[in-house]
Structures are given as structure tokens and as C-alpha cells.
Length: 404
Image 1 (tube, rainbow, N blue to C red):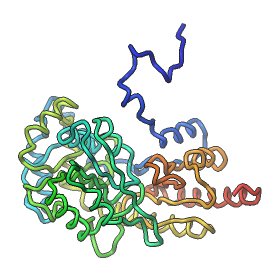
Image 2: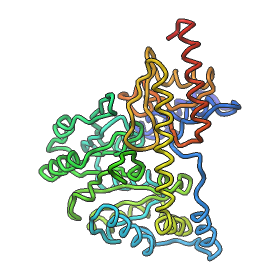
Image 3: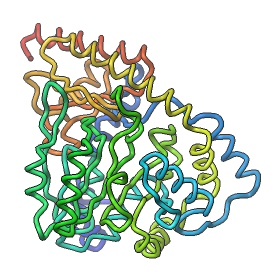
Image 4: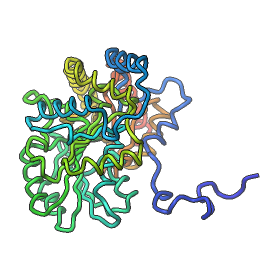
């Protein structure tokens, strides 16, 4: 019969202290509290409720029928790398070749591999926060030292104190990580801010890792995609762009991503891909190739629909007295807070139990997010309406009872 505290494994069976001490996902903790409860509206995860388009699935099915089930080159198939180079070059007006592209098994794998290539224990890493927790956990796993620069909320959205970030980029900084448009805030860097960051990085020899997964999902009438460091940087700059097929092509479960990196890193990135996953599955790469070749109309439609859903949800939340709802410029989330509520994890669990409303707790994205909640609006309009009504009713009930 097993004995002892399972949360404290014996030294012989324990992972190293750093890994054992990593916090579990607080988003998953809330989701676990809601699993098994019928009728819960689930807005906690960062994915659309719309399935992958048929033309992408058909490409994968055809690839399986052709027996595309064997290993490929570590850095990805030649045709997909060329297609990604053409896509990146055309989108951002930069001349990038297939030797600067490495295909990965997901966007998070792209981030891990990039940081494995760059970071040594004790390296100083600057991260703009609040941010998807993997972005700060990966350098911690690699025993790097994370410095957080917090965004600031305002009526027009979340904003970066550029001077604070530039000051944090000290001569002993190895890497600065930026996710723009950002998860969970929807904050988006301007091209002028990117240029200032790039010039500072060049001066100090600091690497930039840009998480660009939401670059196509923006809600400005004057631009079709987010500003990119790739438009400003040369191929020799210390810049790596990490991206994924997950969000813009509705392929979260396919686990396919890519890196744009200096050609000098190609061989070493391939080694790390070998030691992590060997390669992305061949038939999944065929699906990615179809997404690139045929997906532009779908992305345009998705962006328009998400823009409408963002505005729909913001209107309803802003109609609830007291809510603080900075509008996101991009992504698929509204990050908001309820007056008088501080502990977001407890609040998110309470909303699941009492309102059957599933939201992500802001503290999952770092201490800067405490007191906030993340609502993924990539959902059916009817569900967004029902969720807003449940929140309104819950707040009215708790306010009447004197809790709020």
C-alpha cells in the first residue's frame, strides 16, 4: 500500500527541485473544477470552438493515404520551408529563405527550442508581462533568471512603458521576449516601439525572441496584420520569430509551428529538434502546406468574425457597471476585472460553481494579472451572449448579498 505525501516524492523518485517547484497550470485547475458539470460555458482555453477547415483536413488525409508517415528532415520538409519563407517574406516585406526556417512540432516547441539554443544557466531574460505562462516557465526550466516588465492597463488598452523595458535591457541581458499581440491582454507593439527595442538590442548584443502567433488576428481598421520585427531586422540581427499554425488557421490540436532565425542557427536548431521531437509529422506538414497555399480567405473571414465577436463581448461587458475592460488590439481574449475582487483563481472557481461560467484566472499569467480574468471570445455568439448574461446576474446577486 502506498504511503507518504504524493506532493512530496522521495528524493529517489523526485524530479529536480526546479522542475518539481514549477506551478501547475491555473487555467487547467479552473477547467478541472468545471469538468463533469453540465451546462458550464467554457471560455477558459485559448482556442476557437470552430474546427479546422475541411481543405486542411483533406490534405492530411490525402497525405496519410500516400503513406506520409515517415521521418522528415529535422528542420522540416523542403516544400513547407520554402512555402513558409515565401509567406513570411510576402507578409512582412523581408527577404527570407528556407534556410532561415525551422519547422517545429507546435509553437510552444518553437519557443522551447529557441531558448534551448540561446540560454545558459544564470542568463538574464527580460519578459513583458502578463503573458502566457509557458513564456516565463521555459527560461526558468533552463535555469535562466527572468526579469518581468509589466504592462499597464488603461481605457484605450494595455500599454508598454517603453523606457522601462529599454532600461531593463542591460548589458548583461541575454534575451528579451515579447508576445505581440499578447496573450492575455491583446496588447500590440507599434513599429516605432519595435525599432527602439531592436536598436537597443543591436547596441547591447541582446537577442530578441518574438512570439508572433497572433500576428494575423488584429482589430485595427488601418492594418491587416501586426507590426513585425521581421520587417525591420536584417537576416544577421539577433532576432528569432516563433509562430504557429494553431490560431490563425484553426489548427491547435495539430501541433505545428515554425521559427524564423538567422541562417547561422540552422544546423544547431536542427540538432535541438532532433533531441526534442526528431521532426514534425510528415502528414501534418502537408496540412500546413495546404493551409499556407489556400488559407488566406479563411484567415480574412476568421479575423472579421473575431473582430465582430470582440466588439460584441466588449459592448456587453462594458454595460455591466464597474467592470474594467481595456479593449484588446489583437488576439482572441478580453482581459477584464470585477471591482472588489482580488484573488482571481478563487474567483474563477466561484464563477464556475455559482454561475456556470468558465474563465481563466489572471494570476495564471503572472502576478501582474492578479485580480483579472481572461475571456476567450473565439466562441459562438450565442454562447458569448449567454456568458455575459450569467456574469451580469451573478454580479447582481452577489452585490445584493453584500459580497461585492
